Length: 194
Image 1 (cartoon, rainbow, N blue to C red):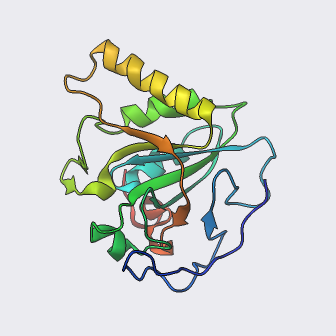
Image 2: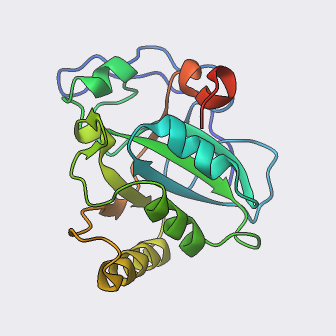
């Protein structure tokens, strides 16, 4: 997989989005493309939405086998959205993390298990005090195998009755990952936090 270069935003669906690409690292990723140059060819990617992306990023970044994590937006209709666009509830995007991981060290199944541990997957379009469709529980998959694994982990958890309510996590094919503004990247490292 080759790193992608920056792409300019294009207005879609009446929303303006960002008209200039983000700088630093690679800007955006399409299905299965690497976001950071220099990694192993055996690296894979996973994309999760579990509420505010700051805490989700911090949780995944600590895991052995995770090479990098970027926060951004996916699952919506606006190209190159800004944080303000996503918060307007008109883009359809979720706040997500894109996880670059080594499957020889940590499996996608284990990442899914951790995903379900770090948030409440029974809350529709919210996590705690954060309310809105951008905070939905979602696993955006890069292959049929990832989709099958995500459904199996979800179904196993639902059958275990660990959660009293039904798991509402969206499992869908990955769309374009739009890297969030730089001030959102590594937020807890910059500002303190969990």
